Image (tube, rainbow, N blue to C red):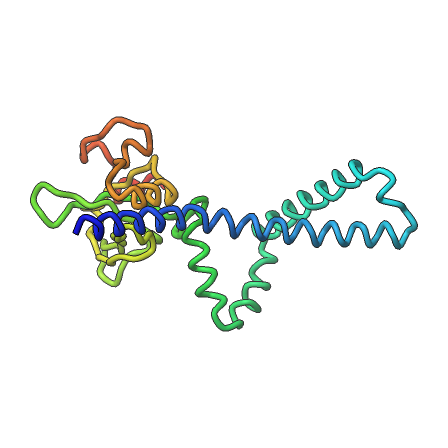
Length: 217
């Protein structure tokens, strides 16, 4: 039994490490791939116009970096414009695109409006208990004044149960983001959310109810 418990603990730690490393690894792979493509294109243009990039490699490295950052800026600007809607209409016709987009969107803590991810506390299933969950949208449920809250299962950040909760029983933890909640889940209770946020514990009444938060927003 002792060996079984140790193995279980070992694999839980490995799984936590995987959830931390995987997003970083994927982003790193994409960045290096994109940088390599830009480097290839810049060198191709230089060869075409007869410029020897090897004569001053440091200078041309910074040129590639500048082009890379400028391209990211253009993409960022493009995302904020209405031009994206036309691209979205085309991409949404591709099977599976919408699903992938929604999954990736979960990890975006900077979303605003009705699609902003909120970390919330809801009155629990006992008289003196509460649960911490996520709201992936602030749109009302099929029942008026009720909203969907997802209670995650550790250590699976995106797995869990969905509940329809009245707005008066939902309290917004304004300091917390999706990333903070992810750290909380992966710690499996070793760290409290207050530890992760580096704040003092609060009374439930000190948090804004969702109804108050929506009025402010």
